[in-house]
Each structure stands twice: as C-alpha cells, then as structure tokens.
Length: 288
Image 1 (spheres, rainbow, N blue to C red):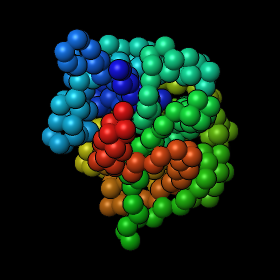
Image 2: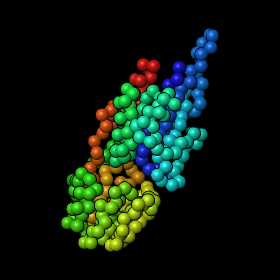
Image 3: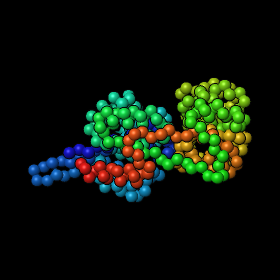
Image 4: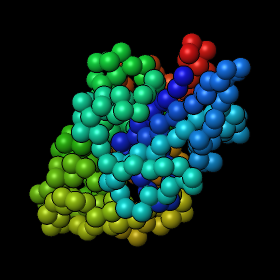
C-alpha cells in the first residue's frame, strides 16, 4: 500500500524566506510472507520558521517520501536539503490530474499564497474532477487595529483608481503582478518595490523601481518611508512576518494603507492553522 500527499504552492519563492512547497509524500509499506514493514525514503519537515517542534515531529515520525515542486517564478529559491525538487507548473487541471495519477496521490494540501488564485482554482478543479480530498491553508491575515488607517479595496485596479485621491507619493508593495494598473498616474509619484525585476514592467514615468527582498525591519521600513516622503502605501493583506514591518511603520507614522482584500477560499476543506492541517491529515491516515 502506498500513501501519497501532494502539497501545492503556486506562490513565488524567495531566497530569504522559508519555502512553501509542492510536496509529494509517499509512504511505502513493503509486504513479506510474515509481516508488513515500512521503508522511509525521506523525512518530511516544515522549515523551522514555519513549524513548531510538534509539527516537525508529526511528519518526521511517519515514513514519507517527499517531492518538492516550485513554480519557478523567482530566482534563487531557498531549498531544503535532501528533498527531490521539480520546478515549473503542471499545465492546468489536466496536468495536475496527470500528476495525481503518475505519483499515485491520495490527498492534496494547497498552501499557495492567499492571492495566487489561479493555481488554487486549478488544484480545486482537479481534485473535484477525480474526487480527491483537498485541504487549503492560508496563513492568517493581518488584523487592523484602532491605530491603523486602512482603505480596503477589492482589486489592484480599484487601488490604482483611488490612489491619487489618497496621497501624492506612494509605496507600491503589492507584488510584481498587474502593475500596469498604475501606469499613467501623473498626480502620484510611485516607489514600486518588487523582489525581482518584473517580467512585464510598465512604463514608470513618474517614480522609480526598488528591488528588495524581505524580511524587512520596522526601523528599515520607517527610514524608507521617511526618506522617500511616502504618504500612502498600496499592498495586499498577505499575512506573515516577512513584510509586516511596513504595516507597523505606517501605523507609527500615521500613513494610510490601501489594502487589497483577500480573495475567498476554494470549495475544499479549509485549515486556518498548521495544527488544523496536521489534525486533518491525522484523521485521513486513520482511514487508509
């Protein structure tokens, strides 16, 4: 009997951050005439900054084979040791289903970035097509406090539309996608920060590009905002610690934040915490 779990992540992977991978877990049980033994091909572990000892022990104590698959959108990803790696997409739901079949996947865990809706939709569609159990995890969103001045919008297009009414010098920290929405803004100077140079950059006539990798510190973000005289920030509610410093710096400086709201989750099992993922997987293991 073989048990395999596919953990899918379509987000960009940065060298400074812990990987949120596509992982194929396979437990190989070898049958003999007298007993069934288990052979472990690799120990599964979440990277240290994403897991507690309890989480690590859960995966390590099980005999699981692991495959790591990255979208390949960002240069120099940080890779865990001793794990086979595949890079590139699956080619839509059909390609994901083909991967299910070739790797004999039994369960899918979707840990893509909260705004990577295309891959999550493809994963959900593929799972529904073949009745594959699927768990979706999104790290907790940042929560607004009484000291924050957030203007919530549904999309980056809406953010660009209202931006000239909010400020005259903006930090655009919404990622590398869909930046063309800000093209042609003549009334607001833009500091557009991305990890790598965008593959399809827009014509930034009034502003400049800034290529930088987090995690960022509150002091560093405060200095950046003051040096460039930023009076508004545009970003997504990505959650996590790596880029939260800009939110805290904006709070301290009284700078408004145009916050692009998160899209909704897919119609699959939702796990709001890593502990919930482990709990659900543990229940699944009882059934196989």
